[in-house]
Image (cartoon, rainbow, N blue to C red; front, top):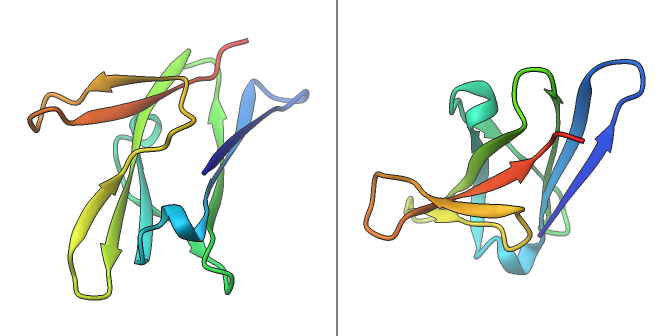
Length: 109
């Protein structure tokens, strides 16, 4: 998995690219990004032929210093599961499930 941040010079935004490698996708057919930056509305990652999933989002740095997120995956058999990235800036309890966590990404400079 990888998370890349690119700060835009012309706007108060950061372009964040989220990537999940095939081996980290755990045989998922679909993966969506669920994030605090857009009120937890699912954004589907694009799946490539090599099994990698990827999406890039422009996120305002004026509205927040950080945000929480998770990846929600669906397997071919319909089973849903959460993927927590191993390269986030931090983790917090999600307040929903026992020992459930959300990843945290810092976006302020």
